[in-house]
Length: 289
Ligand code: SF4
Image 1 (cartoon, rainbow, N blue to C red):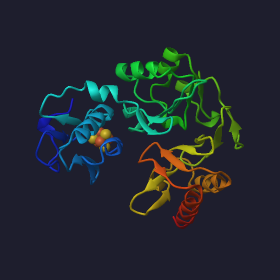
Image 2: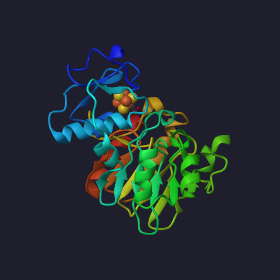
Image 3: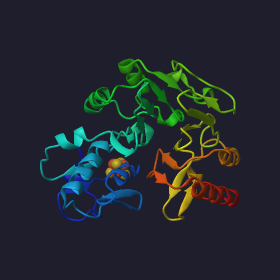
Image 4: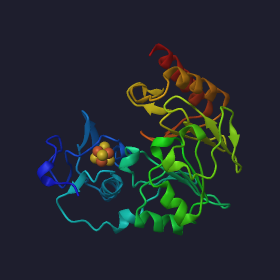
């Protein structure tokens, strides 16, 4: 639980606060951008919730914080927020919340499909979330973008009996049991209009997943920069090879998509040609870096 004694001084006075255990993962700013903002290397509350909508968003952020760094001075009935995760992003795409500290608070997604739901990266294995996902039809497949965002994959696989997918170059002892381990650099059709596109760079075995030529789940490969106003990549968090990551980004020009749904940062939706133009700007920027 967050500690009032460790409340960060940047929080505005009032009920909600962030304490000094915040790891600056961004999750709270995704779920409640009207309440939380980035302040240096940590988040803090810049606006206390005033409406029912803001309150629900702040409560979802509190639940989703991977380090339990968000607290409230007052006691809240959390049942509406617990029932509201996963949260709809668009059409049949949801974000799960319940970020895991082992994934540095990365956002995971659930795609709800009649043949079987798909989980993209792993949230925390938490009872209320698992119950809600069960009520939504469970999980038939788990697609893992890279080695850092696997979190509680084994517990989800055990609970739902789902097949997991992770590129072989990112498989380590704790993921050795993963059922499908594609290799190489060629795209892999996974059925149901889902394509796995290897994007080495951030890690050696990183991959993104393209759903119906519309939704691109990008893990730590590609995100949106509010400050720059275009797609970008995490130069300071590139663990394998920046030149490889640039080549991987160039290969994405071969694909059509309208959404980028990253592990860190907010989802971005543009028409396909604007998205391509933004990707080109990203590549230009990467070549300079
Ligand atoms: S979700 Fe928690 S750890 Fe992540 S930025 Fe917000 S307060 Fe910090």
